Image (cartoon, rainbow over all chains, first blue to last red; front, side, top):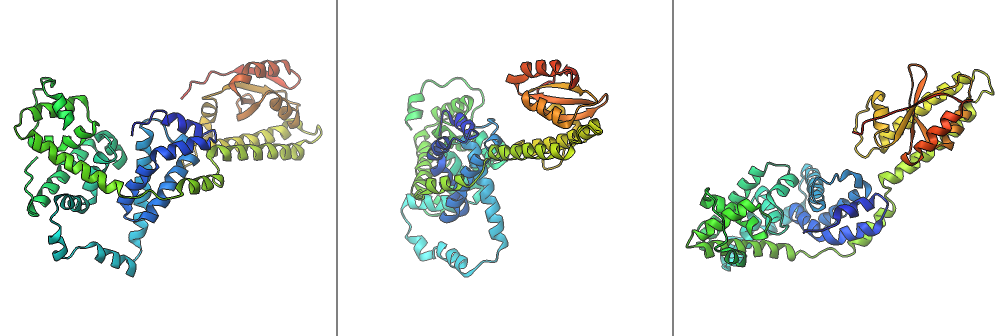
Length: 186
Length: 238
């Protein structure tokens, strides 16, 4: 995630440098895309939004003030776009396809009981976390962001990041314990 | 795990011992290395003090690998860069838009000049009206060009300060009998732009690019048939 020269590349965008955009894309696109997949739950929407993130950077390079790392800035744009899309989607009525997806996402008790593998249990527990907790876990473990960066992206206090991380890990421990894997605490 | 083992014996003295909950909260950041040096030392101290440190770290590392696995199984979309670059071709940057607007202003100045050049009849009024229109146009363009331009309009009184924040400006009074085309021609020759005015005493604020300022000011001072007075301005950068 440490990307020396990102800010200089953004400065070059202001001069219409498409190569700079390509380099920034190569450095950050996959992580931004995966972040958006996790937020939206939809590959196609995440793909479109990820491109919009970079397009916005291209269109308004001066909006990046250099107060944070470029990656943090991109994650913040991505989150904002995901929220906008979800707001629009939530305003629309659930169609049949969505209902099918929702049903498909739910395991029957029989299937759930077959998931005895610990890593699979942990994965399910992570995915079952409330989004406000899961996004903190994702940003810390996969995106390797600091508390202050996560706070900046999510527009919350650093203390809230701490609280959410604590609660997320607590829930994971409880979920595993309930599934028969006593992992203790912390 | 290696991080912790390598850190054994190097932890400093930190009076505030981490609780179980605090340790659980900080461990993900400890593993990624994205933690303050103070918290890092506290985590190391806490782990050194616990007989179950290995298990605690193993729990966090299993979460780390699980979360990374979830993400890394998401395939990156194909052709995303090509699609982005195609959109870039049809998406003007703010800077590109700025150039277009500047071009439009240049064209409108020519149109204004032809419209308002009365061939000597009431020349001062003619170019004065044009200058006011030009100031308005330039100022509005300035609002459009500013990347952080507020959505609400701002008062023109701040225009000179804003416009001169990164340039050199001068207060200029033109001779009363000059035509608009004379003023326009002179300013174009020195890369100068009227950004505000007229103020009290028929003074206009003229902006120069920094590299042209000295030449521009000298040229204005020497053009006594068009310019009555030149007062260089010092505007504090914002």
